[in-house]
Image (tube, rainbow, N blue to C red; front, side, top):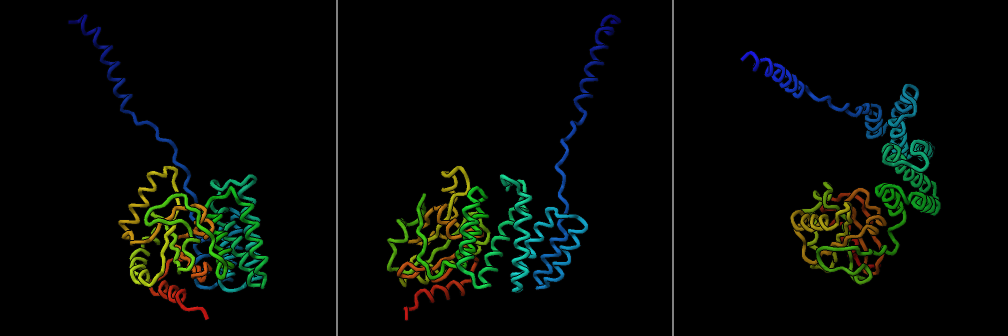
Length: 323
């Protein structure tokens, strides 16, 4: 027994040491640093919502003096530009927009790294929109359109939402009264659709949506009632969307499921899937509506969620006989 204990004691000690070692907690990787809260930006937005541009400017000035031109400053600069546009102070709007565009470009670098600097990406889009608005307010609509076209051409590698924002602003300035841009079909669900040209002679309502868009889902019930009311009067409804994911087969199934379960798949409504059309109609924040008359001309463009009353009013205007 003594000989056995001499052999087993070291083994027991080794086993105990191994077990205790296994019970030691593994050091967790250091968490990513939490970005500081953007309190100044929150206060700037609150002042702007109250129409108090001077206070928003002052908050931004103090922030710059205390913290420099950091990410919050760049975003705040864009919001102050937007605030100046909202209150109609166009000289200030133009000045802040130019400053925001320069600050955003500096932070993005060359070539621009949009993923690393979302605050600069946002500021750049806002600055471009406000600069265009300021040009329109100064009576320079043509110059505003050229500016937006040049900006669009220079941002071909930018994220989709930034490019779509520029097209949305351009459409808000010039689309109404122009021929409706065509819809190139990549795929579809719902009723057959060959393009807008085939619908010439009929009033058309385009409803741009995305399967995961909360505002689009909230629009579904009103849209269904509107289709039921106006389709018998000859109005054609088309609901374009686009692919957002790489697995298109799975996403198409999701689109079809959402169209049936959320929107009720209204009879006769085509759902063309078209990345090009969503971009050209400026669908950065869906839902978006475009109203096209029998001649193929856009009579209304609303890149917003609409009440049933406003949607009906726009269609009534679409159906009104030409003078």
